Length: 291
Length: 291
Image 1 (cartoon, rainbow over the protein chains, first blue to last red):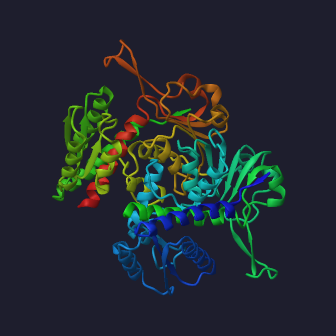
Image 2: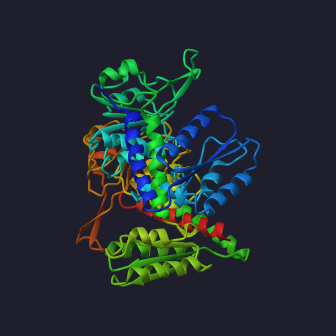
Image 3: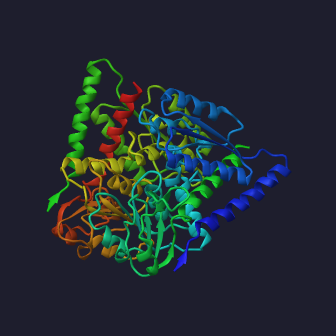
């Protein structure tokens, strides 16, 4: 069993980006600039946004964090995004989800200029991804693909189970893994709340992407020997023994599953840091194409 | 075994559209107008476009067929599409595929205004479909969903195999059937040329969408009792006994498969006419939203 070390690979990618930024600086060129919009006081959202801003600083990107109270009107959110769209210094725009209920996620995402859509959630980005065109891949799926690439995992012909059909992870992962691309060509079964025989599907799978958000859902008897496990789940559990006050639990029961795996991502330090790496790559790409 | 009668259901849909067009005329409103662009002399393409133009005439839509020799320059094709985009009388634009090699399908599709994209191939349309937003569903998948709807087939919880991952049929069908929508919520396995065990996957499936374009690929021993079969394949075989000079063969071996089915689409008169119905519905929708 080999750990797919997201923290390590994410660091390698960020180190490479750091060198490329230094080159841009040396050449007197514009450096990438990410704008992040955070609305409300969701603790997890704050943690995620802070990690992204920190990664920007480490690499040498500019970043602008815009925070608003959750009472902000939808129309004001949209006009902020329009301003960011029109600001030539901003390369990438990230709106941390979820949004307060009175602000339409759909409207917000559709307002982001596709050329600055570093989260890859705009319909244009999604449509291009499906058609195999060059675009922004959503950060988490992008990070997972970068991880598979680093460990030279040849997915061609594998049976893959993707569990969870969110637009953020499950759906795009099912598309990427089943596409005719280098790290694709899997036979993907997309599972969700109406799937009757998840256990059997998992047992038949060479690769499982668990992205349903139910802690330790995948257990040892659900997987076959040699399986590759990508654990996207992150559930916060109160834990007084931790400095942060909480522990992070994945969708996979690591103790029973990992002995059967050829590769497995841990939680934390697996997919989480790779999401940051995916976003940082997207932001660089946005800057490159804009300038 | 019950036949999913595409010809009948397509006719019912077109009859309904005919009544709605008559209402528009009675109210002095604009009637739908489809522009079809056909390049080159591909026999199958001509047949398809002619069938679409004929359906428009029958329903009472206006239609404009624009034909060019296959030597037309790409830039000219794009400028024709721009003209159609800017023409307020045109509601829907259809470019018959395939295009000659020197004309980029991607560029052509991306040039069509999303509001007139009745074929549903523009990235914006595809992206919206994935996100479950209101949009144009590509004509063939749309027609298949209308057929399932007519026969009140409750797909929820079914295991579905979609064979073929084209952007025109297989990929969008896999997305629709797996989405959290009325005729979705299947557990979909998307199969393609790198899938190792298509036979076993088919044998485990409650519904099979065959869209790989290999004549009579699905045979009786590959399916289980009670399966629902959607046969999208249309291969033309020379047949002197037919007036047209050819016979149409599906991807399913009807003689051995149909006795095991609960429902099956025939070829011809199954998915083919439903594709026309899907396109006609999309064209009406385009007109409705434009005016």
